[in-house]
Each structure stands twice: as structure tokens, then as C-alpha cells.
Amino acid sequence: MEDDSRPLLASEQTGENSLRGSTDSLDIKVKRPFHVEPRNIVGDDPQERVSAEAAILNSRVHYYSKLTGSSDRLLSPPNHVIPRPEEIYIYSPLGTAFKVTSSDQSSKNPSIITIFAIWNTMMGTSILSIPWGIKQAGFTMGILILIFTGLLLLYCCYIVLKSPKFIPYMDTSDWEFPDVCRYYFGKFGQWSSLLFSMVSLIGAMVVYWVLMSNFLFNSGQFIYNYVHNVSVSDNEFGTNGSDRVICPFPNYPDSNSSSLIVDQNSNNSSGDISFTHWWSKTHTIPLYLIVLLLPLLCFRSASFFARFTFLGTISVLYLITLVTYKACRLGFHLEFHWFDHTQFFVPEFRLQFPQLTGVLTLAFFIHNCIITLMKSNKNQENNVRDLSVAYLLVGLTYLYVGVLIFSAFPSPPLTKECIEPNFLDNFPSNDVMVFVARAFLLFQMITVYPLLGYLVRVQVMSQFFGNNYPSFFHVLLLNILIVGAGVLTAMFYPNIGSIIRFSGATCGLALVFIFPALVHMISLHRQGALTWLSAIFHSFLILLGIANLLAQFFM
Picture (tube, rainbow, N blue to C red):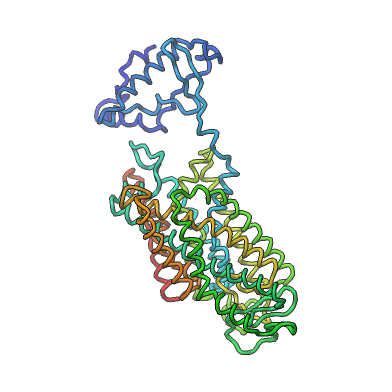
């Protein structure tokens, strides 16, 4: 009882350390969290009375709660007298204790669910460009860059995840990384993080529009060919056989085999010409999508589309199955030329490698939502482990798809330079398995696109108007601007590889490299723990981000 007679706010230290003693009690690492020992609960029956010691401790918590309204932060309840959520009891004036079961715990996910949620979130359109990126960097250098970039972005993501915990004397339980940037850099940090977050979201929406135009065009082409008995509809160089691979834009005049345009039972009738005129990948399809997607963007709530997010997992799994099947059928076609370019093969090390780093920056980008995803993890102490495992799975998935497609691409007769930024474009529109993949991805993107638009609307409208849906006309104007960007890009620059690498390098400059590195160095400096080695390393990260963006303009 000696502890109970002691002044509750008395410092445990004297002299010049007295102030520090009162603030140390706010550090959860210094004092063991208070909890009611099981022996202090007389019974599990809610009507059972608790012991006198538990009642005294309960009174202490109530006393501290009376001080929380004070403007003096030092009078806030120390963490060691606040029970953990799983140890909270509600006490009645008669001394009855009711065990509280946290409602949040039922909604928490085990580690395996959290890991695959991160994997599913990161598995976006970038996976289609990984083989092209490896071709641009060279096979050996591409693999090395993929591993190095994955590890580097994992570390930066770890900094983002831990950043709220480095802020003292403030409740950061509901903070996101933009809130951390605002704490350290003021309004500049808040608005700049918002700007670069918009770059990543709008960049993804532009890529989606280009891909949806591509998938809708090829799906319609497949149906038209099937109905009109057209055997092959692609007028490009390609291989023969059932597992045909094409080169849409060949850079050389000769080819060992060329694709047939139509079979003997069909001809170029006026109907074929009319269909080609009205069903164009770059001239008409991007405009047709406006009729479908612009109304969906204007929905006040996006909860309906959130129900279809599971399609992302199905699409990726089907893509992996498709890649595995094609690789088994085509076999491996590799020759190692370390620095020399040949007719059919590319060097193992190429100066165009920054194109791959730009793509990978977006492919591994999850930094703006990792804190939210990890909040639902049941075992918070495993966050770092689960994040590392998720990055490992993502890296292995990218490696698997990229290496198999590059290795199985038939060279000769085709050159590796024919690998497209969307590797599905290397298969003809009459390929049934590829048609199914395009149909899956098209439907998935139609449901995800309004979700991305909703995220853009919430962030923009809440910042400028303080309301997520100020009016229908405000929302319509914003959606017209977003859709217009997608339509113009799909019509005049439908190169998803370049779009992904530029948007990845731009948003990654701030949200992956600069802000996490600066936040980490500032927090260590304030704690007096910043070393020269740490400062040099994190400054090097910033330089890497700047170099990654600048290099995209010279490729």
C-alpha cells in the first residue's frame, strides 16, 4: 500500500532529471503496462466482486482520466497505468468487474491473411511489363536489379511503417504517412505527399485505361474472328503452330516465318473493313469506354466495387498458370552475350536498365497504404516479419513471370527485342487462353477503376472543400479530367511501359526515397542517435530516387 500513498505524479528522479522523470512515464518501453492480475478477479461471474487491490488500482486509473482534459501534456495518464485492450475490465461502483472483449480483435487478420493482402495489393498492372523491363536491362542485370530494388523498397517501406512510432507525446494510432510528413515538414509535407500520391493513383488510372482499351479490342477481335470464321487476324511477323507468338512491331525485314492474315474460307469483305474502322484500338475503343466508366466514377460510394477485389487474386493466379503453360510448350531460348547485341538476343547488361528501375518502383510501391494494411494484423509484433514475407512473395512472383516469359520467347525466329511492354500483346488475339486472361483482367479493371477514382476524389475534395462529395458537378468535373487524361494517352501514346516507369519514378521520388529517408534521419537526430554512417546511407537513398527519375528522360 506504500505505492498507493505516494503522489501519483511524483517524479522518480530528483534534481535536474526531475522533468525527464515525469515524461519518461509516457514511454511504454520504460514501464510495464498496468493490468489487473487474475488473482484480483474473484470469479468469472459478472456479479462476483473484485478484490480491494483491484478496486484501488481502478480508482487510480479514474483519477488519471480526470487529468486528460488538461492542456499540460505532462498530466496525461502514463502508459503504465492504462490497461492493454485484452486486459480491460469495466468496474461498477459496487466493485463488479466485467471482462471487455475488444470488438476490433474479431476483425483482425492473422499473419497469413495480412501477407496475401499486401501481395494482392502490390500485384497490379506492372506484372505485365516485367518481361519487357528485363529485356531493356538485360537478362542477368534485370534479375539483379529486381532483387536489389525489392530489398531497397522493402527497407524504405519498413521506415514508413515504423515512422509514427518515433513521434513522442502524441497519439499516432490513426495516422497515415501523410500525417507523419505534415508533422515533420508542415503544410509542405502534407501537400507534397498528397501531390505525389495523386501521381501514383492517376498514373495507375491512365495505365488502366490503356490496358482496358487493349483488352476490349482484342476480346472483340477474338469474338468477331470466331463468328466470321477468321483463323488468324494479326498481320504481323510470328511463329507458326498452335502456340503462336507474334512480333507486332518488327524492326527487321526478314523473318523465318510470317503469320497468315486469313484462311482460304474468308476474304476482306466490306464487313471486315467496316469492323476494322469502327473497332480500332487507338481511335474508337478509348472513346467507347467513356460511356461505361464515366457514370461509374460518379457513384457516391465505391463499396459495391470493393466486393470484386478478389478478382485481382484470380487474375494473377491465372496469369501465372498461363505463363507456366506457355513456357512448357515453347521451351527455353537463351544465349548469353554479355555486352554484344546479336540479331536475336540482347546483351546481359544494357544501359537502358533505368527503365526497369522505374517500372519496379511502381511494382513494389505500397508505401502510401502500408500503415493502414498493417493495422488489421492481429499480431502487431510480427509486422516487420509479415511485411518482409509479403515482399519476398511479390519479388518471387515478378521473377517467375519475367524470367519465364523472357526465356520462353522463341528466339530465333523472333528477336528478344520483340517482347512488348504488355507481354500479352505477343500472343495473337485468337489464342483462347490469352483471350480468357484478357477477359479476366478487363472485368477486374472495370471494377477497380472506380475504386481508384474514389480514392482520388476523397483525397482531392477533402483537401480543397472539406467534403468528399461537395456536389455532383464538382465530382463530374474531376472525373472528366481524369477520364480525359486516360483517353488522350490511350489514343496518342499507348505505351504502358513508359507510363509505368515515369509515374513510378515520380511518385517514388517523394514517397519511397526522399520523405522516408528524411523522416528517419530527423527522428534519429532528435533522439541523438543519428550516426554519420546512417546519414550517408539515407542521403544516398535520396540521390538514388533523384537519379531514378532523371534517368527516365534519357532512355
